[in-house]
Amino acid sequence: MERGGPALELKLWAAQEMGLPPAKVPPDGAFRRMCSGQCAEIWRYVTQHVHHQRNVKKIRGNLLWYQHLEEAEVRGPVETAG
Image (tube, rainbow, N blue to C red):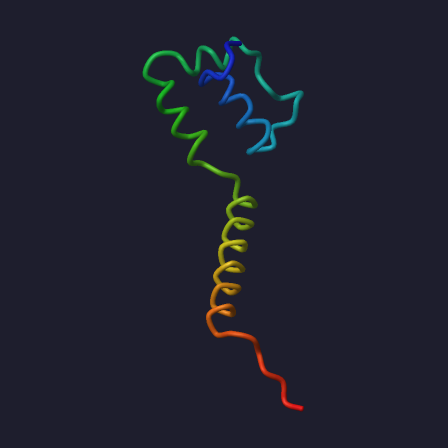
């Protein structure tokens, strides 16, 4: 499989992002056929923009956490009664 091409990107995406077990990963030739012609651009878009649901939840959680930290930083330190 060519280095860095859409077929390799698709194979890595299927295994890493979607959690496809190694026994279920199709042969390299299947990925090359899937990524031939106009389909290459479609698969490139999919591999860059489609994420597993658990990863999306993690990203959303991180964004909310950093938003909370920024808001706390703007408000300043919390004073304690004492």
